[in-house]
Image (cartoon, rainbow, N blue to C red; front, side, top):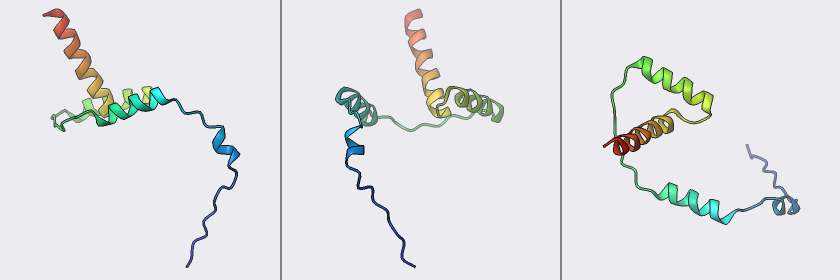
Length: 80
């Protein structure tokens, strides 16, 4: 069975898209930042709480965990 592919031929549609070079470059830097995978054992209840909070904030729970860790590190450095 051959699938039909519909192509958008309205080139004017693409002219409406705004491209911010600075934000694209900063996003690229974030993607290129070297992150080393790690693991941490958390209780299921803690993970569920993180997921609920992350859903309220509209972000993945791993991103929320990373922000908590980085925030804790910054606070520890200030206190030292």
